[in-house]
Image 1 (cartoon, rainbow, N blue to C red):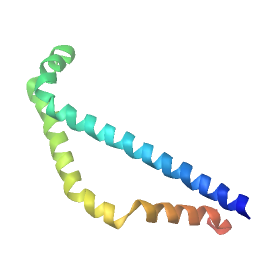
Image 2 (image 1 turned 90 degrees about the vertical axis):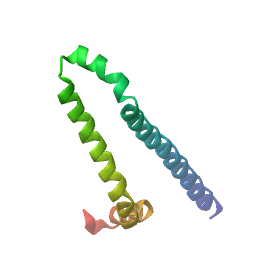
Image 3 (image 1 turned 180 degrees about the vertical axis):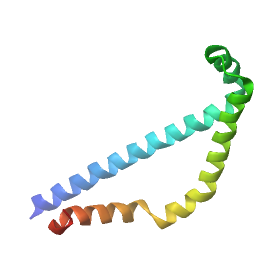
Length: 102
């Protein structure tokens, strides 16, 4: 019995550690995205020279990115509270464990 409990605790620990690393990776990707927006004025001349695109078209890309981030920041919390990660994970685990879900 204690073997089963220790195995379960070990698996939970691994899952917790994996979740922590996924959170770190997701945060790093998000920060890189924000960094790209903040550094846009520095990047534009090189992009313009490399691609031959006009300043207008590159500004349109920046505008779409800013609008997308703004919408995501406004709508994001409601999705977080509606589809909480732990609830989603529990539902996924329940669906996998029931044979009728396949």
